[in-house]
Amino acid sequence: MKVTDNITITNECNMELMARYPDNHFDLAIVDPPYGLGKRLSDGGGKLKNTPMAALYRDKDWDILPTKEYWIELFRVSKNQVVFGANYFLEYLPNTRGFVCWDKKQAMPTLSACELVWTSLDKPAKIMRKSSTDLNRFHPTQKPIYIYEWMFKYCKTEEGDRILDTHLGSGSIAIACHNYKLDLTACELDKEYYDASIKRIKQQTAQTT
Image (cartoon, rainbow, N blue to C red; front, side, top):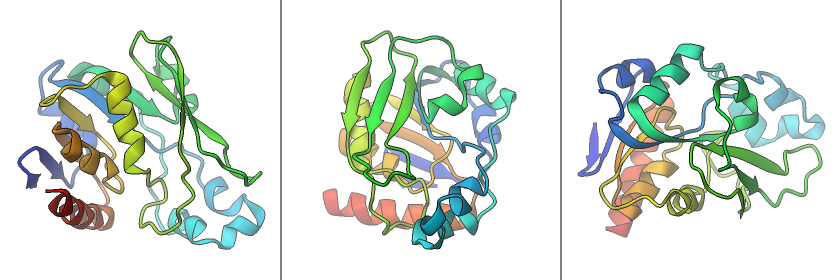
C-alpha cells in the first residue's frame, strides 16, 4: 500500500518483499527483529506479568528469531544496516565500531536499562538517551519516533534516501521517514498490527503535513 508519496507498506513476509529487489537497492535498512525470548517477555517479570505490556506479548505468537537466510537477504539488498537488539543476533553481525547504546532511563530493576543497536557504519560508538515507558501502545516493541530520527542523524541520511524496514510493528519508523523526507519500503506480517500501523501513520503524517 502506498501510504504517502514516500512510504510504501505491505502486509507480507519480509523474505518475499526482499526477493523483489536487486542487490544494494536500499541505502539503509533499519530493523528490529524478534528476539526469540517467548514467555520470558510476558511471564518472567513477576508483578509485570499482569501489566498491559505483558498482555501485548502474550496475545501474539510472533516472537520467533529470524533465520540465517533472512540476514543474508538483508545484507544483500541494503548498503548499510541498523539492527536493534543486536546482542540477540551477534552470530550474524560482523564486527563494527558503530555501536549505539540506547539508554532507556529505565528504573524498573526487572526491565532492561538499555538496548544495544548494531550499525554497519565505521563511526564512534554513542549513547542515545530516551525513555520508553509509555504503555499506551498497540505493539509491545513500539519505539518513540525520536529513536528513529536520532538514528537517521547518526547515519547521516539524506533526503530521498531509500530506507528498508522488515518488521514494521507500530510504524514509528514510517512517521520518522515522513518527517525526514526519506523513502520507506516496509512490511508487517501480522494483519492486525499492519492495519493499526497504517491507521496511526495516516493520522500522524496528516497532522505534520
